[in-house]
Length: 176
Image 1 (cartoon, helix red, strand yellow):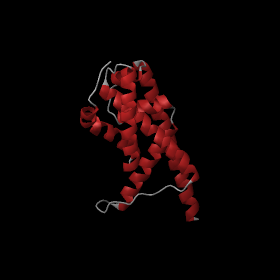
Image 2 (cartoon, one colour):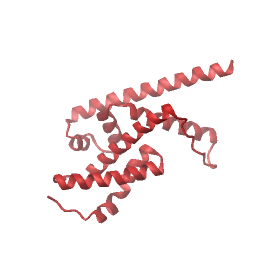
Image 3 (cartoon, one colour):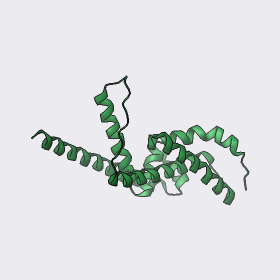
Image 4 (cartoon, one colour):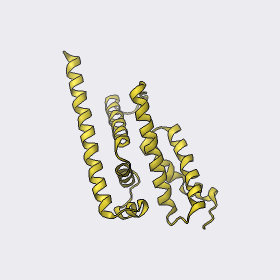
């Protein structure tokens, strides 16, 4: 078994793990929790088995932890009022509000995807991994990566379009 100097590992790969978690969560506290969980899980994995690709493992774990948090927040959001983040003063507030809304809808839709499709989508577009890297990291075939990615994009497109249609109906009803 490999022995890692975890201080060096965190220093070297911490920015990658942070970026992966924060891109999905867009929340400092949630990303920090995800960051810690990722390294704790990686430590446990390294104690049980040899790790062939430490950065790949860390990105996969961060993605999985972030998706789990998105699902948890999505469930909470259904029962509680969801928070709206303050807007930065530098850009057009309407554009920022729309971008925040779209990002929130995308995060929620990713949280609703089946686990494998969510992981593949996030590793590809947020982790910027190739199909081959994703296949190796998730231990699935390259064709499965392609199919999962296609399904994820179709479901996300459908979810975002459904949200747009619902928003338009609500807006028209308010105008009456």
